[in-house]
Image (cartoon, helix red, strand yellow):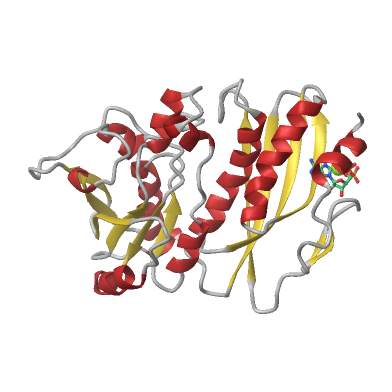
Length: 304
Ligand code: ADP
Ligand code: MG
C-alpha cells in the first residue's frame, strides 16, 4: 500500500461530520471555519517510541494516547476540541498496525467530536505528532498566569496513576490501562471556565507543572502531602510521576463553596491540595506540618 491508499483506508473518515470543516483530508490544506466570536486554541505534541511510550506498546493505545495528550492541553485551556491533524513517521506500512492505530485514535476523536482534517505520512523511526485545535470565547480561556496569593489549589482525579501504570506495563488491565489510555479532562476544563484563575494539565508531575503555574503567575504555593488524592500509597509518584493528565487549577477561596456545589457528579472528583502564596517556589508539608522533600524531580528531556 502506498501512502495515498493508507490515508484513504485508515484516516479519511470524517467527511461531513462537522459542519465547520469546509475541506478536510484530500486537498493541499484543510479549510475550516472558526465559529464567530470564538478564539482558536492550538496545541501540538510529539510522541516517540521508547521515550513517550514503550517500544512494543499496542498501536491502538499509541493512537489513542497521541490524541489524548493533545486534548488534555486543550482541556487545560478550557477550550472545546474541534479538529486534529496527524503527522506520522513509521518504519513500514504494516496493515494491522494502521488498523489498530486508527481505531484507537478515532475512538477518542469520536467521543469528543473531533474531526481529523489532515496530516502527513513519512517513512522513518516511529514518531507520532498530533496537533489539536479548539475554541474558547475571548477572555475565557484558562491560562497559567492567573494564580493569585490566597487562591485554593485543586486537582481532578487521582495522582500517580500514570507512573503506577507505567511500572505495571505491559499489563493492559487496571493501572496498565490507565497509563496507556489517559482520559483528557475536557468537560472539567469547560466547567472551570469563568471559575478558575489559572490551570494546567499534569503531564510532567504535579510539582513541576504547578511550578509552571506559579512561575507564570509570579506567586508560590504550599501543598499538603496528606491531602493528595493518590492512586497508590507512593507520595513521590503522586507528586512527581508524569503522565497523569489530570487538571491542576487555582480558584479564589471565596468561590470554592460555589464550585463544589455546582460541580456535576459525572465530572472527575475535585480535591483541594493547598494554597497559593506570594512567596515564590512550591513547598510541601506532611501531616505534621514538616517540610516534605522529594527524591526525584519532574521529567525533563533536556537537563541543565
Ligand atoms: P501534500 O503532498 O500536498 O502535502 P499529502 O500527500 O501529504 O499531500 O497528503 C494528502 C492529503 O492527505 C492531505 O489532505 C493531507 O492532509 C492528508 N493526510 C496525509 N497524511 C495523513 C494522515 N496521517 N492523517 C490524516 N490525513 C493525512
Ligand atoms: Mg504532505
